[in-house]
Image (cartoon, rainbow, N blue to C red; front, top):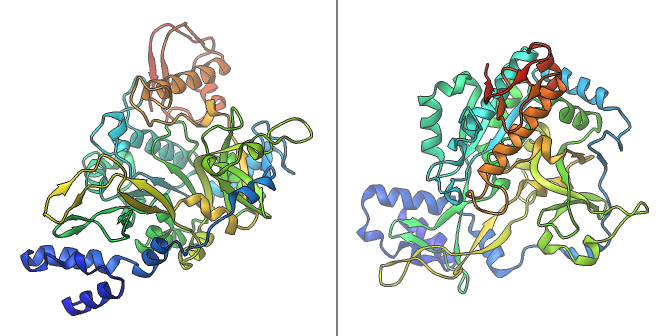
Length: 465
């Protein structure tokens, strides 16, 4: 697009100010800014700024919300057994029909870690990074079922270069480079909260931020990952986020529940500890499975109970899904498949005096999409409960915070692996740390075949591949 075309496009939406310093820019800077402008969907931005996008009446929705179609952690609620689900999932894995997608756009800023969060060392004894823990699991599953599982890793502008370098420098953590596909999510420009004008980060750049984990859909399509999955014969993707070292990536039983339910998108959840817990609520509302954020949930609806006195809205979202590739292909072709959410944020910007201002109060609106908003358009969307002790130990905050810290996550890993060892017949002395690499054993049952009978562990021990 040439300069006149850029001016014309910007004038149409009263955003001409982004070219104010064009004459001062180098050819390279002009090229970069032009590419950013061309990537902006100005029609959508104008609609969002004007507030003309469709609004959801969450109060009415929540008032009529019910428990979603689901299977509980004890296996109840489904027409099939846990064994049947596991066998169906194992068949899909053996057939090479399952891939994995990791959302890894976050930096470890809140952890006091200035690198991509996936590079954060979390192994209680091994000090393995989050990336290593996930790769080890995929390698173990691939070996068990005789397949190579493709690993799609979505980065952001902030994490892309370091993530690529990390995998290259570490020999792709034992995986084949052909099976690891790193791609970048899209961005959305931030706008001034008062005027709706695009904010500038510098004379040559818009103030851009990642478009949310819902941007996965568009990014998978734009970067050829959906085509790659189809060529491989992959029919569903195990989706997870980078901050959960206990996540059950490509877990056969979860995959089996997804397939036996005929679902296009299955979401794994944990049971809420109390009615107003700050998690997304998975509910059946308006005839569709969907997420009602805690901030949009009236207290009366949150506290509603069923005939057994249990919360109707018991299912808390943890960002773990199984999603059909064909469904993602369909969603990627629809501009309306995912709505944008607004967030008031503090965004540094270039002011009229050409100074970069770091505001102390929210000054901008960011627009994001969330992957869970695919649920209402998925056929037979289904919910599977997991116990937090077996599938959810998020690493979000630095040690010393009340929850979601590395210390608590490491303790959860040790506790899980202690249970596995004890179930396999071993005894572990009080206060001793244990850690099991999935390449040594994926399950307690497998572990029982790997360790000596009556094994006693009286010192920290890492069971490695």
